[in-house]
Length: 428
Image 1: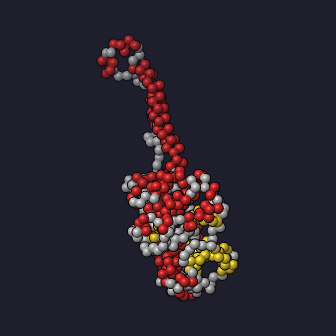
Image 2: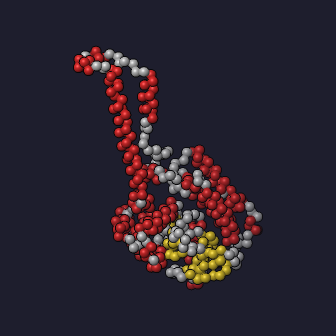
């Protein structure tokens, strides 16, 4: 549990605290400098600062957010004072952009927004996290490149923190309003409501209708299903190319064999007179031998013909069709048992510094508080994640939602997180 002694930021050198306008009911937001770098501080309002329920809600948000790493998700850096310290996003919310520049959302920019939003929401779902408060106020657009940054995991659900509090009724699905169990389709409902706010929503009316169906069984069942519907056109040229190959190759083979056939007839039946006789002896008579050179050429032609037209890569027979389709992406595939062993060894290698830090008992004397201990530990983990993101072989497997890699990674991370907090809680 989090006691009041942990709400102390004496060790932090916060400078130039500037209040930021926010619609939060329980917290205030500030732009601050820490060691010369801009950060975003979310702090409980005075009337809630001493309430253990809101303190625990902040701890939940921090513990969930700091273990996630995605380019379109705001980074959680530290528990500080009575609030959370996060990376600062220089930009504006989707609500502000819609109010100030509605003309920005042409077809191209709308698709860019949806691609990035669905990508990060799909990442959360793959890591067993439901956001449950998706709305324009929680979607930031950066000043440079207008990239999406999803913020505020305060209402999220995870397999560790099952108790969720808070929602925005306008974007909440019926099951969320009724207190029933939520799942991925609850976030998909909110995405449909966000789509309704965009200027070009008319062209997405069918998608919106399915996203916001009152019965969750009638919605898209996953973010991947929604992505396939919205962006299927961009992949049509692949299917067109495959169709052309399937048509052209057999036709070309037919033309080749039809050109070769007359020469064989001349060898077997040299004259038209013999053909007219229709003597059965011609049927059983051995044909004239074909020169060896011609046989080799005929064989080589057959060998060059492909047995399949599309190579989908290694696929395990026990996978579902949806999983097979997912694995056909260029960055995804099923790994062998040997590669899985290598993956585990690489994981240990990348997190060896973090494990060594936890093993070093002298750190309990070196760091004065739980927050300072955890901040240093998280900086080590951050370096490990940066190395993982730079590893083209390792990163797609690390982010894969498929077993056995995902389950092993989650267990590995959970064990390290539990150990770090268990050691850190020994400090004041």
